[in-house]
Image 1 (cartoon, rainbow over the protein chains, first blue to last red):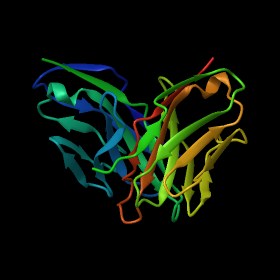
Image 2 (image 1 turned 180 degrees about the vertical axis):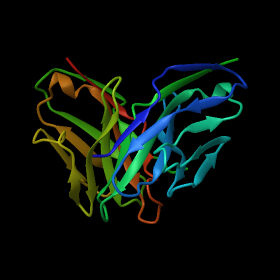
Image 3 (image 1 turned 90 degrees about the vertical axis):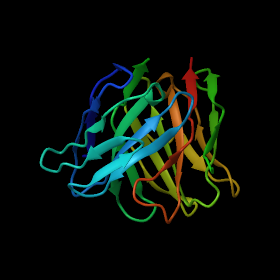
Length: 115
Length: 115
């Protein structure tokens, strides 16, 4: 079955540091890959996505590239801010037909950015 | 901005009691989901709902669970007789028919604590 493994947290960084959160996956077929973010007290929000190999998703300074050869989708940001403190979830999709659709999530990585 | 809302934000219940978690999906969305996250574990798919019926459910979603869309706006998850292991954060999500793959919109979650 499908699975997602992401870097264990928590991760604590100083403001303006470089961020990498590793994510690898196991899937049959050609899934789409996603990063979701959960800010304190809020729901899961889609941060970025990539739907095929070598696609790069980007949003709010975050980037991730769909690497089929290494089955990875690592999240990166060049310079983090305090406002990036949140829990980040890597996920893959499994389209099984209209209305029958699942996301498989990783455990989540908590990021804390200190001034 | 349209959002998915969930109530209650936190519910404490005794083992064996019935619990209903409520969700108001985004108004023009057609696909509805429940996920849950046990503390420290992965976000897990429970059930998807489309066209007034369950389209897919996971092994977790046994006979103790049921979902309903009683009117045009609410989507509920009922746990008939709660167990200690049902303690988790429950997330409702919805997706519109024209939204790209994987773009689920999540609520803030309902934390269920079973004593």
